Image (cartoon, rainbow, N blue to C red):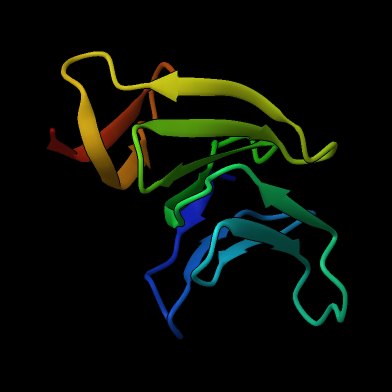
Length: 117
């Protein structure tokens, strides 16, 4: 089943995918918690955006997560290990911030909404 992006609620950003870890939650700050519904302890904490996170979304398979933050890059994470696998830099112009992101359902492409320098 494809991943579904949930709206920004309760002052946080959520992404949901069926199966563990189920939910990626960025509640302000610069880290993402991977959690299971009803769980008391996060499965993992992902850190890599020093200035705060602006978007989170699982890839359709559910084994990777893409995050963007204030700054000029997006990170692709391995959900099981919690390691950042790849840094995606903006390919057009230098940017100040990435405000939003979507993983496109074809070809594993990531589209970002940025402000230019």
